[in-house]
Length: 383
Ligand code: PMP
Image 1 (cartoon, rainbow, N blue to C red):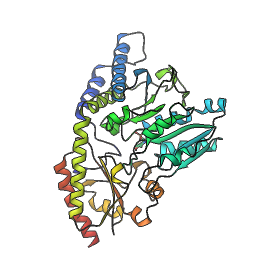
Image 2: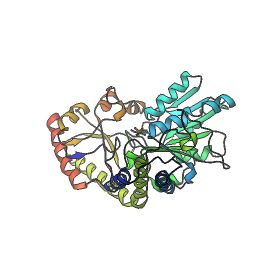
Image 3: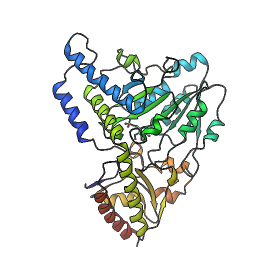
Image 4: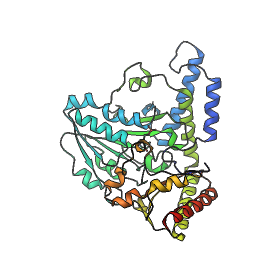
């Protein structure tokens, strides 16, 4: 495969992250929670250094960073972890959106089956949820609002700033799934108000299988989440299980690189998008961009090509191009995208939708070269 355009599914690991991880695997044996020898202490130092790197990227306190296996787990803890508190307070209403990742949607449905009420707010055709429509759902017993920062399929940035500002000071918890924006919208995330935030290392050129849940303190107190799996006291009991030191070190390094390089990364992403759109517009293909471009992440483009089923295009370009038509988590059971369906796009447009996503270090020339070939294959399919 020569060109990879599926960064929203998983971004390739940065060489510098890999170097840090190899060094840890080779030279830092031990369990970060072992207290009886220097090996444990050394592993602990590596873990705490990574925690500081994440805290710095997000402008939070290092005591607010909890390591997990990734955003799926972070999202589960943020939602399911509130069960005890909900039972105690009688606050059992959750508001989320219809375009969340499955790890939020399925968890919200699980809560629904267990006595909670959940409102799923749909987006507008722009792909963005209207914050007022969401505020209108607030009830006396609303426990939690959970909204993603940017959607993984469309790249559309959601009004989490407005929601956070509105909820601040109210007795409602706010969780943001920032999987697609962490390390990319760096100053934006620093300026958000929230109680909980999820991230996954592999979306910011770190390793797969590690992430974090950020729990913001309010008057020195963490949000009332409890562990959802039981075991030791690691991560202060919120996430039991041996800390994967090398993975955590990789996540920390990826955060450090993102903090230092996000401006040049975003600039490269913007230029790539401009040039991809230029190429598509020059072609004979009829393209519709899904989601309002003004709200879109610079690294994502979701387009429908008139007359070509996305499955046909992906199969005919599989040998040289890695693109997708949505979330990898839903790809084994092919169904029309629930995200695009919620935006009320027509069925043809949905079945013709493909997602291209790239990263700050992607090679623009290579992408354009391979995209020229993709356009040619697509033109052969239509004309
Ligand atoms: N949320 C969003 C928005 C995502 O894009 C993803 C990954 N596709 C996840 C959560 C889950 O992340 P992970 O698979 O790393 O647990």
